[in-house]
Length: 221
Image (cartoon, rainbow, N blue to C red; front, top):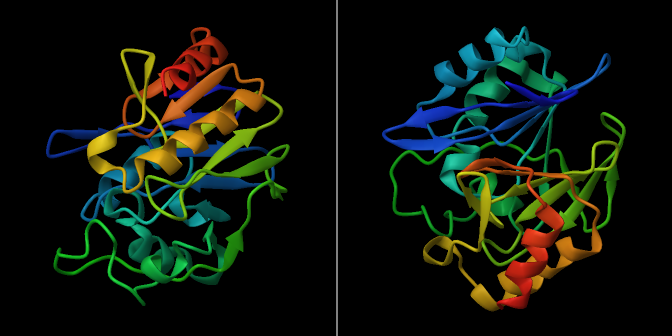
């Protein structure tokens, strides 16, 4: 469903876990943020097709981090899209995504997904897609976790740096966060931004006084 112009929030259900990959697009480019669980490729493909977006037309995939529910469909995307799609991730999570190291939280699983990372991103970097996508390094959930700020729409794609419940931001999900203190410092980075909408991978959209919500969360830390 299109929440803001050029921003589509997907809703995929995997064994009771509802997740929200994001599609960003304009006349020139289509960018997918995160890819879902292993085994969800058909669901992902169908969800994109319902939006009039064949998966073969993706130009870029940005991975917010290495967790299996975010990189799960990467192998199939690479198989179908080949060299035409470029994969972006932070350098600290790259070796896990590429399979050089076992995933920090999911390394015990069999048949772990893996795939190439074409370009690593850094804090403050601006990716030249859809009016500009600013990379914010927000470690804590994983070492290489990133969030994304879309300047034109003042939208934050938070990945797993925050979660939301019924439109309200819940802050850090401590059970799945590797370093709570670093994650708290990362959350404070959002107070420097003018944000009108937040997309959380778990919980979806929050757009009610989000600057105030984030300020309140950081004051509690």
